[in-house]
Image 1 (cartoon, rainbow, N blue to C red):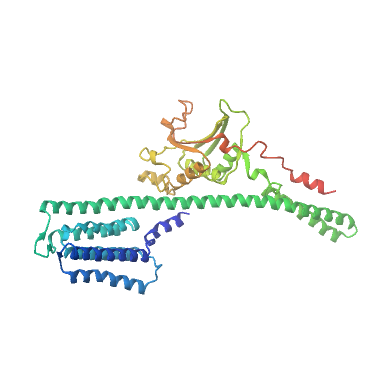
Image 2: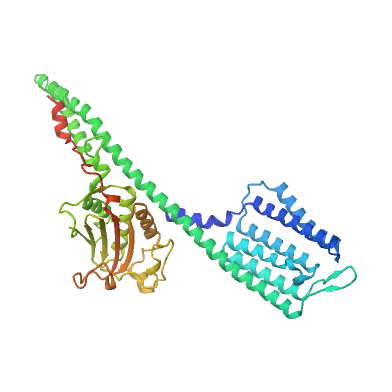
Length: 467
């Protein structure tokens, strides 16, 4: 999954379609022509009209070449997109240079390519486009053709105001670039994390479906196996005088018994086995922890009713997202625990809560408030890398767990054992590591009364069908 997500993040630079930039260019060309025509016709501003049209024509030629040489659905590489935005910045800067420089009120439009780069590209090309923009703005502040009316009157702003325009554009490049880059990065990260969540849920759903298929197969094959066993037994009895054939009949019966035992180990009887959809609360917790039981850490389970809860633990809906999320939380606790992980559950008539506690170092205080965000990774010291060189945490597992649990109606909280509001006083002296508490409304998780039904044991069903 990490490889897939990495590839997805690398491909964000290829999200920009050539057709999108072509449409933006045509819009810019139309706007530039209209602005020049209105200024020349209605406001009697004198400028080199032929040179302006030549600069605009360069964009028209570039657009026509792009439309004829490449398919419309072509996605630009990062370098191609950067070169395109630099071209657009240069074209606009040259047009401003012959129409008053920073005295031109349309000079602010030079911010657009940098904003697009910050949104669609990675940091390095964004910095390059921003640096080119600042360089052009600085040159425009000193070298430009002044705006003149037809009678020769110069249109100019005071030098101090012109300096303020330059400074505003430079700050705008930096601020808008950083702002757009940060927002874009968070959107991309969230998209990747949601994709990973969907993949994890899909995988868990497939495992659940596979369990149902196994249960159905065990149920359907029970009758033919019982028939094979019955017929082979009768053949063996009738072949007392033919030891060689009797041995074959007994072998058939033996293999039928073996198939029956294999199916018993793979799934319980019943095509619509209720245990595939509902299970006692503690059984679900043990199932979630099962892959991490043999990793060298002790996992202890505790279940107790609350003040208003019954003694019998509730039967809950066995949701794939619930199991996968709890498994991620338990895995995280086992990864960082010194020796022990505690999985505690408590219920009453209003809520069901699960706490996962370890005796490890706890969460870094600097990221405690941001746990659950995707691709969150704290900088590790050399000693931490030496203790756990195999761990490459990005916070993605906790994000997936938090997202899936919230889908089931739960609220999830993270804390450290030392100051945790979940652990009471000195009752738990060894539980000083990370603490995760998940709380569901009782009705959101508990299965309907009698949801487990009455399953028929495999042997009993076979005995009814076998005389």
